[in-house]
Length: 377
Image 1 (tube, rainbow, N blue to C red):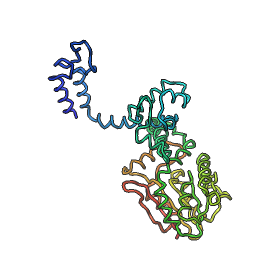
Image 2: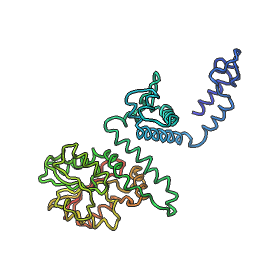
Image 3: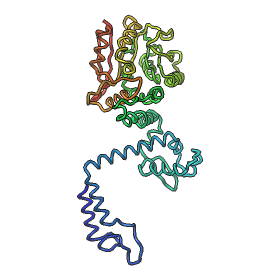
Image 4: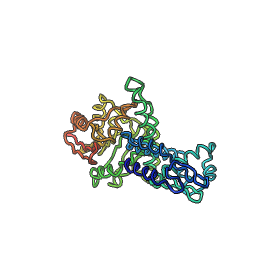
């Protein structure tokens, strides 16, 4: 890249761009007009020296990606992307969005155009970038939630890492994250759906307890695999419970599943067993290590005679899975969460609690996302 630019400078030096003197220093043409404000050779040479900075290109590429994601987050949360579902001019956007600071909107639009997420034709702005288009399409909310989480709560873990490493107070955002986590957790639905299908298909009876039910997607998948399935979803987060209840109603499954706000660790008539399947999806790290034995033993007692416990989660990365490592960083930075356990730690825990038979499913190559179907001895 640098050599190509240097050759380009040499070409300008010897030949000059059209309308310039041979020196190519930005001098006026004979008519006294500066055509295109060409770069001065000194600046071009300085530019080449900058390009030789070790690591510049990969970091600039990462920086541009970060700016693009910041734009998409702001455009999504402000309603800009929704407003541009139909191309319109700037003044139309001011009215649609009820903008009180036009300069700020102009700045946001400028970032969108520079990042190629927006385009403009005949003074009308439109959505151009693939990422922004995806966010506005059906199913795009899941990806929007992923961006929102990455630039807010996940970002906070790194921004405050230095302070917290020295004993600073951990983040206290867990109660605010429930709805967001439930939304972007849908990305794993296809895998969980297949995992569940192998457990529940053709089984009768099939009464399910989904612990930490989030959006309720697991219950929907279980019913799709086995129309005889019934059960309960329980979550301690009120926002997630509201979302799950709305989803269950919308999916027409209110007569099959009930969503309960509560803590599975405390006796509750609404979540009384026996259950043929109890699922724990990305949940163990919400419990302290010393409390996990009691939790698993409690759930074991709620199983039917041939019932199974299904655990699916990201395990400790050990330097191999950036997604799991990133999640673990967030866990270790927030009150109410613990580090990710390793796969060996999970299987050892289940064995201690009387689960002698286990089928282990490795969901994705290169990841530490595993599923475990545990049966009592």
